[in-house]
Length: 111
Image (tube, rainbow, N blue to C red; front, side):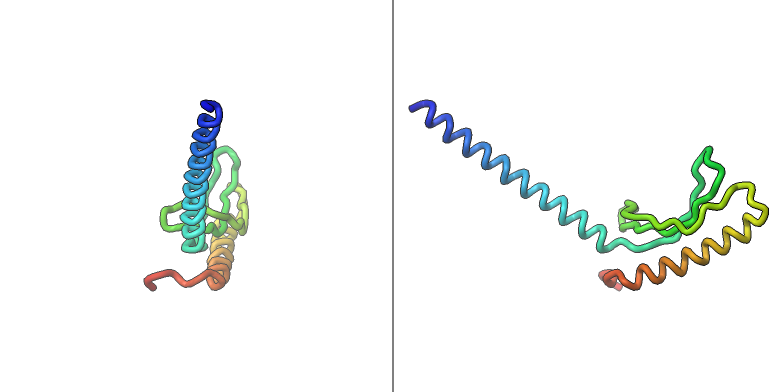
């Protein structure tokens, strides 16, 4: 009889743990989806130390500053003869790309 009672309690505990885990996972998934939906494509450029080039692109960034995606427009070598011209052209391309990518995103709340 004790074994049956123990098994019943164990089953109830396991079901409760599974239910709580499912609820927590669903909540996390909803928050992540909401952050991605509210994210916007933004022009970014950065240099990776030791790599010898500057990356210009657009990144999908949410309100908390998390990056959900990146689209690289150009990698400009540090020693490029026309680095400034290449950088300006890549930024312009990135701005156009961000504009078009954001046109497909849902409107921001409150704007």
